[in-house]
Length: 188
Image (cartoon, rainbow, N blue to C red; front, side, top):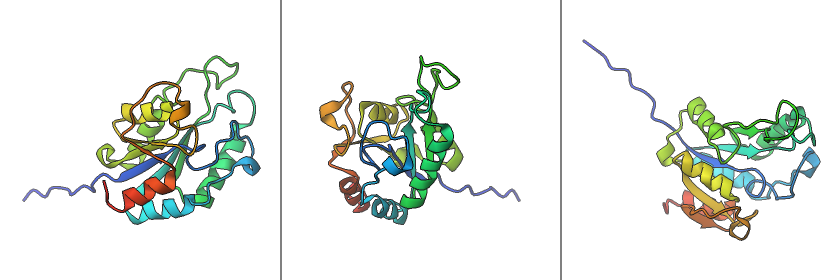
């Protein structure tokens, strides 16, 4: 008798930009002391987890390439962010094309490219059709669209008034708290 292996279904996830979504947008944040996490973020992450969503931060951090901070400092900031919020993992891009040094490259991970999202999907077995990318910039939304995720634009960072180029997100909300409340209520 042939027995088929039962595979675990793919998991759903919320991919979150850092600055403007999880933390106050301040430009280049290069020290843990400058990282100001919105007060509602831990509660939002807990609510996502209760609804069986994994949560990931995907963030462009060109301050590393620009020589404004060491990658080791960024790794410490990522650990702090995970500890303080309960987020499941952080994926980051330290690159910026055109600057000198090993980080001055054109890569496939810097948003709006999808490298960070694809890495998380492969690592954690994520179902794109049941997952969201949440950001505050056009590059976030374009990344989510290219990765075939539902996209959410938040006004808590740059928002619609400061979009680098025209994009049409799936949804627009004031902040992560508003999006979390709607998503976890089962509205969509």
